[in-house]
Image 1 (cartoon, rainbow, N blue to C red):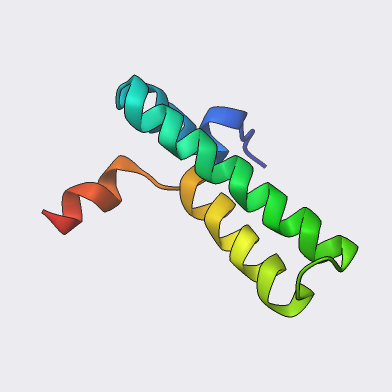
Image 2 (image 1 turned 180 degrees about the vertical axis):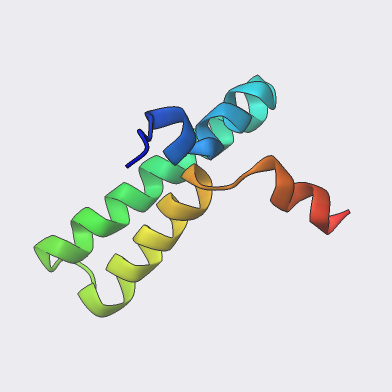
Length: 74
């Protein structure tokens, strides 16, 4: 079984750091907003069936977004 390190698993973090400070701050804000939606859905403050998947989608998209996906859009 091969070893999987943190940088290989979460490739979007490397592209987040390499993309510039403004875009990095925006992506970090979106990750924090996604975590807040997950928390509010978990506690029942907001509708859990909507907020938990929305928050997970926001966090996963920001952390697993690779540079290859951006190249395919151009």
